[in-house]
Image (cartoon, rainbow, N blue to C red; front, side):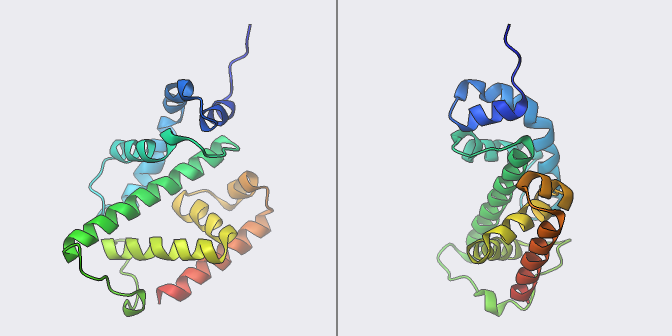
Length: 188
């Protein structure tokens, strides 16, 4: 008799390319993915007229189904999923902004923007700006960008991030503050 595989083991098999396990994995992770999607869409409610299910489908079709991710744990999987959702929303904002500007017009530079609009009422330009800044932060300080993604976008606590990454609580908090300050300086 074989023992059933844990979700982490199933996720590792799935990320390693075993497509037969995809449906079983999706059934198990769907409730948490739905929770993450609801949180992300609440944050970006004026940008993406998507349901949580539509966002999950987009992420699944674009990223997760392809595999190739190195998944260490279920928490790591959810963090990656939240990042993928953020990227879908940034792409959606980029598309809406291009349509609004007439596709071929040059976008305003980030320097021309005095500040982001209120995060309670984000627009495609602010979402796009945050996405571009996160890409720049990732190039400048990959660890800080990862912590900002996990804390701000995925909603993990510092304790959870420390457990997932193997860093100490203090290291996580330091990288969060460094990344947050880097973003604040560039959003002014």
